[in-house]
Length: 197
Image (cartoon, rainbow, N blue to C red; front, side, top):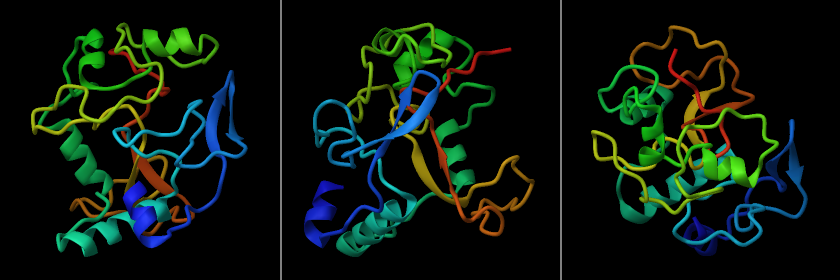
C-alpha cells in the first residue's frame, strides 16, 4: 500500500483511525494508514489498516493496472468460500478453541493483557501479539491461504446489509441495499471471540 501511495500520490479518504476505549470506539486524532495509532508507524510486513473502502478499491485498481492481472475486491460469498476452505462449523480450524491462535491473530490472552478493560470475549490461547501481527505468521487454511481470520478487517465488494438476505445466491456482490456503507470480513485482533455452543 505504501508503494501505491508513493507511486500515485493517493490521498487516503478521511483521517482518524478508530480505536477501542473501554466500552466505546473513537477516532484517534492525527492518525492514518501510515501511523494508525499503534504507538509507532506501520511496518511494511504488516497489513494496512485504517483505510476506507474507496482506498482499497483504488489500490486494487492500481495493482491490476501495474501487473496486468485481474485484481479486485472479493465479494462476501467469495471471501467466505476462501476463508472457510471447505470447512463447516463456527471456526474454520475445527472445534478446538485454543487452535485459534495457530490460524489467526485473534483477541486472546496477549490482547487481554494489553487492554484488560476491553469488553470482548477472549480466545483461550496466546498468539504472542497484543496488536497487529506481521503477515504470514499464522498457519494457512486448507486452501493454503494465510491471514484470512483476525489481524485486520478486510473490505469486500458488497454493500453492508444486516441481517443478511438470501440474495444474491450466485456468489456475486450484493449491490442494491445498504450501499451508503460497505461490508468487511475476517475480524481483527480486537474482535470478540465467538465460542462453540
